[in-house]
Length: 252
Image: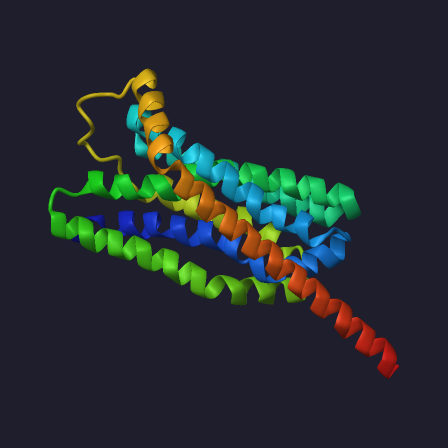
């Protein structure tokens, strides 16, 4: 495990950056809504679109990584995620109003595509890198710690960046993705062991259909609860902002 220390550092950067790229937007959604003059529902779609695209494409990314290799999927995915962040940042910087909103939404769509082939593929790649179960467990612990650390610091970092420029969190995403991309290219070595039998497209589609039949209702329910909670949170923030503005006007 010691000789793969830098491999793990590079791989741990992926969940950290993917988490930052999404979660640091959550505390500033009311600010984005205010800046773009869009409704709470519309601004919540910046998170929802990202999540839907990623959820739908994760099985496809997993299949492609089995066929062509983990690293061969992770690298293009990081490039796509960086491109999505750049599109969102450029749209927020150079345009405003509804035009900016739709450009940012398009960028978030691209980010979701990139996210599907990044963090989820790290987990099987770690399993491919080691033969010892203890090494696999320790490495997965490092990866999950990185993911958790991203969740902890993302609200703080997002609010700090937005206090300088409200769209700075968008502009930071491609920079972070490029850092992770460079680390993966130079530090992560493709493991020699691979699956002896390749899953055909027909087998992949059949197994995916079976999973959705058995577990689909729970996935739909969890997604609906999360989306509803996000919408209610944004509506609450919007009400608080209106009360605050009304109080400020009265005081003046």
